[in-house]
Image (cartoon, rainbow, N blue to C red; front, top):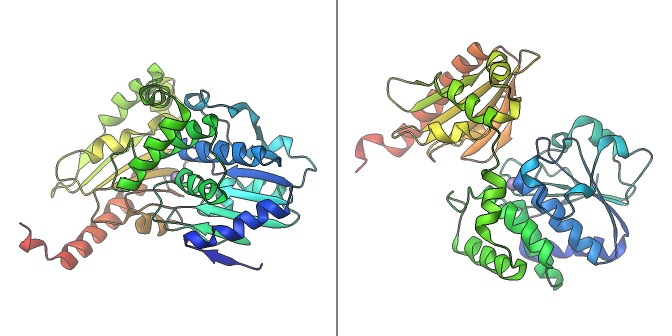
Length: 343
Ligand SMILES: [Mn+2]
């Protein structure tokens, strides 16, 4: 594969050339798609459609209900719809590896000419023929915004709403450390163009919770364990808890952020028992430990402050292993930072 890694603004050109040269595009994103995954897909879909291109979107997992307020969400098709379809160009968004779009989709949706990878994860692999990997960008949606700017095409109202949603989601509503002056400027411009109410976007994404999710939160938070030094907090969710609460496994999303907010906690982890007895892990860091490295030790990935992985062992042993590994990272960071000189 002829791989050219693109890391700076000028090189948006390589991608824009593909937009000139080809007509049939397919887009995809990672499994369990989040606000940035869906927002960047729909934003790019609207831009390419406006250029007169034929564009299809295929995802392994369905669009979560909380994103069904976004325009054209129902144009997203499932892996079963791919059939014999072959795009000239496949653009993979917000996925640090090709396998993240789901193995079946990765093996089915094959481009006849080019594979493109657009991502902002620090652990991203340059798996495309063209790679636009910008770890400094807050979100993949921000990269799409800049791409459209480079093309000097006006952003349409619908596109502005989609990109804003992605930007809002990946910055934790403009709270995380990836939020910059530029992020706010882009957000302001998107609100101006899109003429939407930001509070309504927030409510759509975060305040449509099913009762089962709150019930599950209660069960999961009761399992809280904090290490003696107060630096590692962990909770777990079992299949029994999911059944009792009437919740699905994705209902644990967000609980890890709650325990990360405990004073003094450096690393927070939430593990879920899966039906195959493996363990799904969400990791958060207050900043001193790079949890994407920690997740990578278990073939996972993500960002320095938010990452995940799946471990092929039952949840009690997974917790023990993870806490021990996190402890090692904390010890390393303490010796590097000279902990005793903290003021
Ligand atoms: Mn993202």
